[in-house]
Length: 505
Image: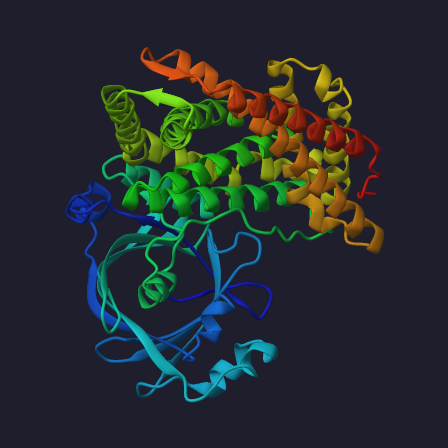
């Protein structure tokens, strides 16, 4: 595929990539939109090169030679900083002769600081063997390439199947790519795939299996608009969710579910921060669907927490029959959640969310609305508002459990705001104050979280006849003392947080 040229000398590949469920490739090929177009079917083998200690991969670059029947293409790929590879990756391509990388082309486009770390000759690290079925489609005002890849990623000792579809924008508007994806998804559910073939290959080499992904650091442009800032952070939240969704569907790992829930909570907080900028008629339906997903994630997560407590707390007692019953309910919640994630309605909701974030009408209107405001100014206002809301609460020691829970939620939102926008304020004083505020919000959130977990556990245990909690006198005294310490810790962090000088300007 040809790269899309931009005003800079960089090339930017703009594509949507989705994973298919096993067996869905045949249904996709039969879709009326594709069945009427004669496809180009071609096999190819991609060999990825790196140093023995994977210097390119660690820098989030990939270098491959893709051999077709009559020519070979060398491609250097690197992530686009705004979306971290969610919709766009930088790439440089050139035809080469032979089966080794063209080092002159690599030197031309590789950052000097990275090139100096490379050891030559570069070695092949893994291969991707694929049959690609490609359709060139017109949709609305755009020309789009729809490519179905079926094949295998191969290392010396392992293999992993590939079944995915890429919709790449050749010419036109990215919203048309979403429109075409939505039409295809009406027949075949499409799950956003955020892991590249290169990343999958390196994971196979390392043999570490599916990887849980936590929320990473966020880099923002202080000169960017508020609209662009929202778009950047929202894309990263979606990436966080999709990366862990992939792991959860493959393994059912509880930690993957937890990280999915964290990602959605962060996204919901972000939407609330930009509430005055996002059109209610567009964001409203999305919020409803995201709320339903969050509830399903919460139901399954709560049962995980309950089972873990029953297995580790010596003061809790439940019969084998009750444990089996709770385990069965937890397994049923997981099955319902997996069915939801694989369903057509959820697929369409995700496409609508992606479309809204990437090219919603609020972006087009941004030049005339709050979205045109400088991100740094808007972020400072958000941070100010979130800290101001903290002042509405009495001291933690004077709050009932329900109010403490609300204080915890607000502390969490302030922490998210610090994580989202902290990179915009990097003066010497700002860095110091930002570190202190982040630490205090974390301390407050952790202490209140432990207190909330105790209340939550009492409420959950009351729902199950046959589960008892009867710690001895010593354990009861220890629990009461611990609760007092947690309240004291929370109140100290709360007091210091309200005295903390702002790091934003």
